[in-house]
Length: 149
Image (cartoon, rainbow, N blue to C red; front, side):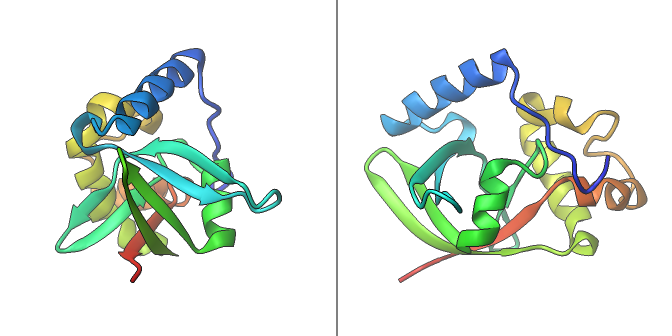
């Protein structure tokens, strides 16, 4: 898994994401999912995708299980976005996490959401060693998010 890892969504992913978006717009997050809205780096228009926010020791994170996707590139350019659930909108700023700090975050992410995203991690799971998680870290962008205002 390389730094340039970017898995395109399958037909199943597009259907599941569509369902997750629909339910989240109604205010129903699947296992805590929310809609990430981030401005496109070229168009400036809002782009949305379902995400699974994670809290670890009071800090909140977003993990990109499919790698360096469009939302990741947009987040890097925008430096933040919004998390949406129903009518609730939470603006936030984002800072990308260094690879060395990712093992504990990835492990917790896999413990909570392997049922949904585990297939994107190949042979890695929540019981993998820190060394193995460090090996794959460049392929899984992580952002620490902080509420604005």
